[in-house]
Image (cartoon, rainbow, N blue to C red; front, side, top):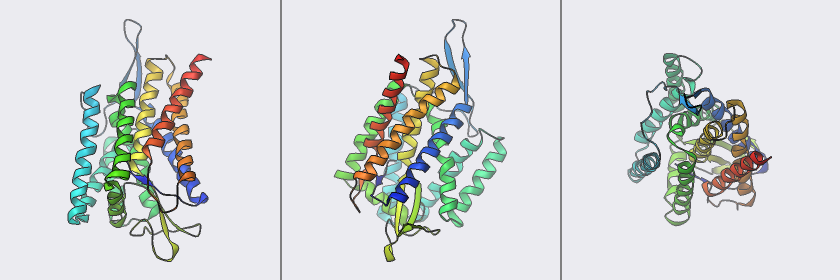
Amino acid sequence: MPIILMKHTMHVTLILIAVFLFIQLFGLYAFSETMNVVTDAGGNTQVQYDETVVGDRPEISGFASLLYILFGVLVGTGIVMLFVRFGQFRLWKGMYFMAIWLASSVTLGVFMGSAVAMAIALILAVLELFRTNIYIHNLTEVFIYPGIAILFAPLFNLFWVSVLLVIISVYDMFAVWKSGHMIKLAKFQTSSKAFAGFVIPYGKEKIHKAIPKGTSGKGGMRTAILGGGDIAFPLLFAGVVMEWLVTGAGLIKSVALAQSLLVSLMAAVALFILFMKAEKDKFYPAMPFISAGCFAGLGLIWLLSLL
């Protein structure tokens, strides 16, 4: 699900932007490793994807894929809101544990055997819940979002993933500025020390090892967060753009990978602008800005095609 952002120091902001770009780059590379480019009898280029360690993807496409993701977002949000309502931290942690294990297994399965990948992902999930600190937590986050892109990007074409970004952006604005339930979710997750996203606790420019309970703490300690949706959705979009560059623009996979990074770069620029314009201790929906950056990156790719 999308999440909100707050203004932070320049030092911490640059770390968040660097992490965002790193996960996008790593995720796109992992996604490209699952792509098999083939040419059919008619000379048409197609992309086939390897099976994931958790099994085959749903056999859906187009509008059905859009409904599938939106339904998952709404149901997932509804379930976590029930956890918030009744203070069920353990149930949320159990749900978070399964998400870490499965998504990380998918990512690691690109580079190693299924059994080894699932075993390592299980260790990461256990450490995250029972021995967590910012290093363990953020390491697990690196492996979660590429797995999400690997699972779901093949279900979309460029049109429907664009529609998805627009809808998610509108939903993000409503959830932060109107209903406010996204703010409640963020506070609940940080209070449980099981936050779905990148976390940097800091105070007076010093990065702390322990994850505090809440987005701000005593003694001037604060928590910078980069929500999971803010990482996953632009990576999903960039993955679909990469496939489109191969099948629609006729580029080889390595060139398509390089050009699709323009989407990630422009999303990072938009995120940086948001951080710079944000007011201290005020929450903002990030997805409208990130989506604008994604579309700007797509525009740059189109301009490159004209050269």
